[in-house]
Amino acid sequence: MRLLPILLFLIVVVVLLLPLVSRIRLSAPPARRPLSDELVKDPVCQTYIVKSRAVRRTESGQVRYFCSEQCARRDTGA
Image (tube, rainbow, N blue to C red; front, side, top):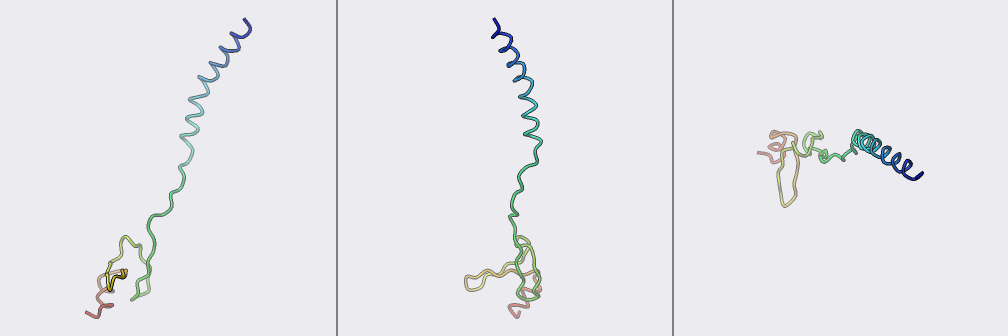
């Protein structure tokens, strides 16, 4: 008979603590993601620009990144 109150107490504690533990786990700050974009250097004006926003030119199989269309034109001499 002594086991029944202890078992009942454990059930109540588990039922009350599970929502609390899950709330604490959900409120933890998310892990920081690494930045998916990188900076590339414009070969004409030597400025850095985010790769996803850079103007791309492929020459002899090599990709070159520019900050603007003007720099890309200056590089090709057109």
